[in-house]
Structure formats: structure tokens, C-alpha cells
Amino acid sequence: MEQFLGYLIPGLMLGTVYTVISLGFITIYRTTQVLNMAQGEFFLLGAYAVFMMVSQLNLPIWLGLFLAFALMALLGAVTERFTLRPMVGQPVFAIILMTLGLSVVLRGVIVLVWSDTILPMPSLFATGGVEFLGVTVPTQYVWFTGISLVIAGALVYFFNRTKIGLMMTAAADDIQVAQSCGVSVNKITAAAWMIAAVITGVGGFLLCSITGVYPEMGALGLRSLAVVLAAGMESLAGAMIMGPVVGAIEMLAAGYLDPYVGGGIRDIIAFAVLIIFLLFRPQGLFGWKIIERV
Image (cartoon, rainbow, N blue to C red; front, side):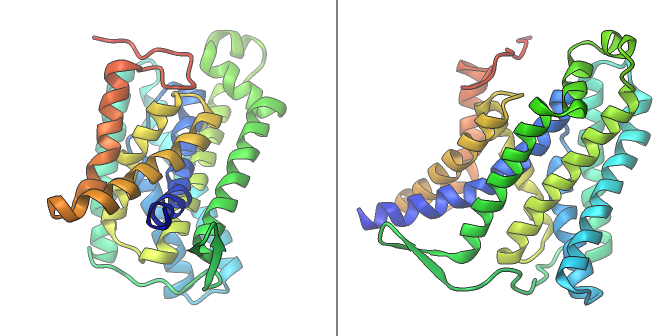
């Protein structure tokens, strides 16, 4: 039992990083009905932005974080203005392909600027551990969980209780009706991309404080698609639940199966979940829109 909990609890907590990335996916999708395939690179750039501010420029941590997330907001606005907005009216599939191309370009730029080696990050959280159900959990994991829950709760409130959040939802449901009600669709869309970039950048900051910074971190963006699909494309609450669930499944599978297969199980679990949901429940566990089959 102790071994089981030793895999389960850290997996649940690390899975909150999936939740944060998924919230970025969902924020854009709820507003534009576009699946941003460059979300993993936003996650990656958030980590590199923090690294640049804190490690390379030696800025105080809070100033460095503020400037890093301001850069992420700018990235979101620029991406929306110069890649998404010119493609308004194009087929959704074409826009998704554009974001896929953007992800390749961003990954290439990152490697050119910072190389593909692992860059160490100073510890941004208190070290040590917290005992929970007989398992000692690193303090960083506790911070991950707390910050992720705060972000998720804030987004739920934002979309359901604020004027801008309600306008974002209205713009996604029917652009013409939203415009007739005085909603500036361009401003709302830009705001969604900025919010998503900042949220995803926070996820990059959380993970890099443990692992360091390296380009392959961006693969978590694709793995987070499993969380988005399992949750439901527009379900914030579903992402809060399914992120830790997928993280726990990965950790348990790695802990119990890797010794028998030589490793690598954790890297395929998320994609297995993605395939299962696409085949048998494309609307997700908490979603209400079914993805159209070809």
C-alpha cells in the first residue's frame, strides 16, 4: 500500500501541470473554437522566459516572474494578431495546421537561441517535503497543486461571472450575434490568447523549477491533449479532475510496468488515453460538444 501511495500521490500532484496546460487549450477553444497545437511551445517559452529573467539577467524573483509573464502575454497577443486573425473565415482545419506550423517554428527558434541542452534553474520554491498519508511529498509538488487550483478556480469564475468572460463565450457560440450586441470579437480573441499564453507559461515555470529547462519539455503540450479530450473540450472543471488522473495513471504505470518492459511506459500513457477517448467518447467525460467524425 505504501508503494502504491508513493506513486499515486506524486502522480496526482504532478498531473496538475497537465491541468494548467489544458486550461490554456480550453481558454482558446472556448473563445475561438480553435485547438492551438503550439500550446506546448507556449509552455516551453514560459519556462525559458523565467530562466532568462531569473538566471541570465539575475533579476529578483518576483520582478523576473512579472516580466516573464508579461512577455508571455505579449506573445499571445502577437500570435493572435499575425497568425490567427488573418485566417478568420478559413476552415478550422487550416487554422489548426497553421498553429502546428507555428509550434515547429517556435521550437526551432528556442533551440537556436538557447540550444537543446538542459539548463539548470535555481530552486524557486522551498525545499524539503510534506508528509501525507505516510508518503513524503516534495514541497514543490504541493506548490504546484495549490497554484493550479487557484488558476483553475479563477478561470471558472472569470468565464461564468465576469463580463469579459461571458463575452468570450458568446463570441465562440455565434460571432455575428456577439458583434450585434457590441462585442469586439478581435479584442476578445486577443485577450483569450494572452490569458492562455500566461497560464501555460505559469505551467512551464512550475515544472522547470524541478527539471531545469530543455526543449523536450514542449512534448507535455501534446500529452495534455489527452486531458483536454478526456475532460471535454470546454470543461474547466473536467481539466481540474482529469489532469491529476492522467498524471497518476502515468506514475503508476511507470512504477509498476517499467521494470518489466525496460522503461518508456509513461511516455505513451497520455496518447493511449487520447486514442481511447477519440474512439469511444469524443465529447469527453464532462463535455457536451461531440467532435465531428469524418
